[in-house]
Amino acid sequence: MIHASAERLTRRYGDTLALDEVDLEVRAGELVGLLGPNGAGKSTLVSLLTGTRRPTSGRALLCGGDPRDPASRRRLGVTPQETGLPAGLRVGEVVDFVRAHFPDPLPRNVLLDRFGLTDLIRRQTGGLSGGQKRRLAVALAFAGRPEIVFLDEPTTGLDVEARRSLWAGVREFHAEGGTVVLTSHYLEEIEALARRVVVLAQGRVLADDSVESVRGLVGMRRVSLTSDVPLPDLENLVRTELAGNRRHLYTPDADQLVRDLVAKDVTFHDLEVRPTSLEEAFLALTAGRD
Amino acid sequence: MLALTHARFQLLEVFRIPIAVIGSAFWPAASMLAFVVPFTRHDPVAATYATASMITFAVMSTNLFQYGIGVSEDRAQPWDPYVRTLPAGAAPRFTGRLLSGLVMMAIALAPVVLIAALFTEASIAPLTFLLAILVTAVISVPFILMGLAIGYWLPQKAAIVVAQVLFLPLAFGGGLMAPPGGAPKFVEVIAPYLPTGGAVRLMWATVGEYRPDLDSALSLVGWTVLFGLIALWAYRRDEGRRFG
Image 1 (spheres, one colour):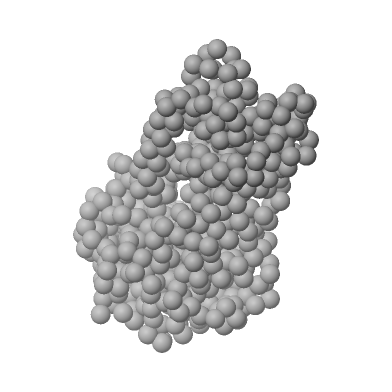
Image 2: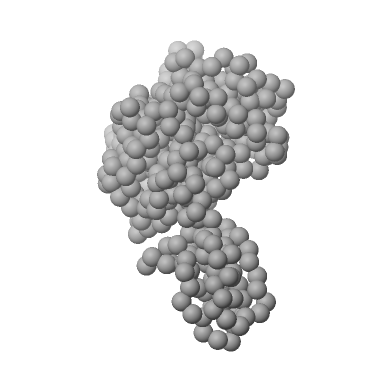
């Protein structure tokens, strides 16, 4: 059974093309990671699949219906952005408000207990710490006994212990047959949970593959050096940047690149190797293709 | 039922900041004390008309501000797109907002009525009083729609400015600051065609001998339809203004 799907899904904001004919299928019981840098179209894709925005063209389906139809969203859970929780309201009040929308919600105590929020029930959300807000946001996604949840960076900014317990909660939901779509711009967060990763960049699906192959794709290194001679052809070199007399070489295999430089007798100094952020990796990948 | 949940949720949020509640009740009450009580003390007819004007003023300002600014503020918050993912259509949210708006309006109107009863000679028959409540509900419709139109149409900062810029000319131009027929000449000319002028004329006719003209009643209907159409259009167009 297909739980959520996009067919040639396109969304424009004025002149900006945020999503460009994206095709995607999420089957029931899958745990899919949606990875991409800021502005890649992740939130747009999620907003179209959860019914908060209308596609410019193409089709979005959720639980077999139009996500803009409230009936299609009865089995859906979504995390709000934790910066948007109504500051003046208490944790218990926010939870009850969300529960009131579902035909058969989780009992309040069960939900609060599962996410370690029981002691905070009378606290106003504006006074919660970042981690507490994040836990409340994730809890809200599970309030209506969903069959499919969209979690937006559920564990970013949490300490190690809180992150582990949240991951355990998500895995448990998945083990019981729940479908999870996890968006993040950190590969680590997605690696911890998902088997399948969909990589979005510039509004398009760049890759839809296993975690291992995606790590190879975006796990890029930047090798920087200063050299007075032109560089020979190098294998696995995705992109070269020039900054003054420094060259920045982007490659998935820094060890091999450095070995090749040495083997080919290229003179260089001030060698520096560091991992790239997802943004840099995407920039290198997409610039390399154009 | 869900509409009540939404109304309760919105009111809880307002009441957690008591100054917001006091704020919306302050201006109508203060205007009563500053402009109506000292000048109409011994004149029951003038006091009754002036109270009706102040009620119209309060209806206009509370709805303009709480819908115009309130809705545009909510739209700027990430909470609003989240609520749109819950399995409920627009109706409960809309009705809930309307209900909480009526409660806030009642809170702003209560002191005006109390001050009129306690400190002025304004008088009104019980049946007329009930009728006046009904008319108050009717004239609140165009101002609620006006607020919604502004709130859904404009971004937050623009909405605040527009609400503040509109509110005084509407009050003054509609003749709310003067007794029937006593406003400056140009105000008397334009007032019947402003929503505030049309509304206050209905109120005056309800509480006194005032005879409203057909023009002003028709123009009020016209404004109501116009604000309703803009509000509907802006609501449909609104999908938040956030990229991602």
